[in-house]
Length: 314
Image 1 (cartoon, rainbow, N blue to C red):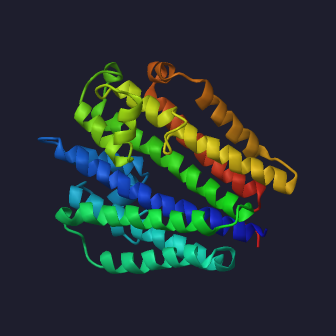
Image 2 (cartoon, one colour; image 1 turned 135 degrees about the vertical axis):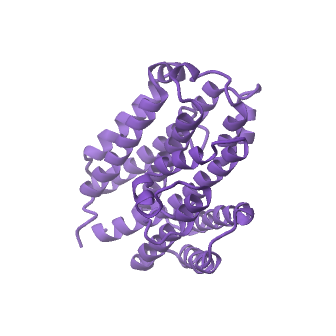
């Protein structure tokens, strides 16, 4: 496969996942701000920081407000990580690799872009945000369903899946970091019962509220929630689950091409950390520090995959 085609598939599905993840970050910010009586703009500062766009945002808006933050994350065209920009980029990548996709996968992507372009033509009132977020989550789910239901399980599938799970792992780590920055400002609070309502909102934002209750038949506990989203290999948005899939798909590529690269070793090492850590070890040594290091290692893996498979060569 040409490196350009692999690059297009990898980034198409990263951008689709990013759009949904940004919707979930907005949802997390909205839910947390609803539980605050004052100082709710702090939540949006932390959401922007977790999305990695705080500096670019402040270049346009010196003061953080909920309306401007939501608009920047949702539809700002100069923000390459906004939902509109992500879906536009996904569609452009999909068009570039059109012959590698089934008709169903391409049409689901193209139709979402056209619908989103109409929906986001104007600034969205806050009262309409839950509906918009639901549409985004449904549409990205439809793309995944069309892709999984129709694509041959070959290298095309593997590059697409790797892009999806690298992006998803990044998102889960960042959403947990929102929680850390906003709700646990002092190390002494980590692992306490502080603000359980907001922990519940985090679970809802990653569609893990009900499944958490199936695993932990008790009240919301910050340590258990961190364990669920970091180390539980059965939770499809946990870091451990994402890396089990990344390693599986990298393994298929290794067998397909008859070689392995630094990316394979980096992915295996990250999975080894997730498989051999206990949540108390992570919390005691610093949840924020662990997540920050994980995000850096995850980004490194993405770069190594691009180098290994010559993403930037025609």
